[in-house]
Image 1 (cartoon, rainbow, N blue to C red):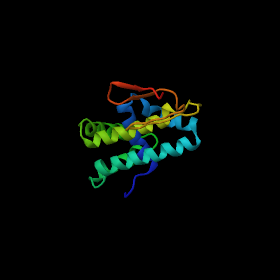
Image 2: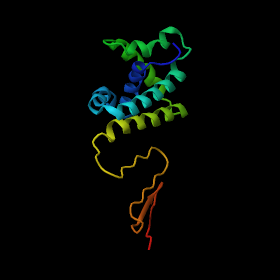
Image 3: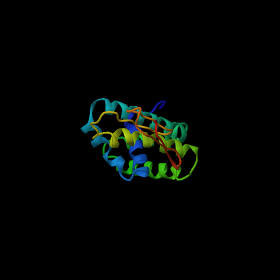
Length: 157
């Protein structure tokens, strides 16, 4: 298998979301069905990005028993394979290294797309995923910035 399928990437994403966001993986498909449209397209892109990262690092080139695990776990009714995949992946993600940090960041972006933005019907909504964001709606209003702390308030008068 050269590339990971969306189904296998979804199986991996569920496990990662459950690990880092307390049960969010179990709600992934249900939430996707309810949201529909462009949110699902954005989520699918993040799921594939996450799945490909994990596939490249943990499964590609491994003996067939391990390499085939994501595809097997994606099959309907494959609870045993899903548990094996979860155990294997949780063991890999226990290490606090750059790979785990990258997985957690992408999982956070997916979580934000799927769960935190679904009920927002407001204008001037800004998503900041890492880094620093700034939004100014009134040039005479105070600008409040928080980076690491303390909070700086600058009045534009």
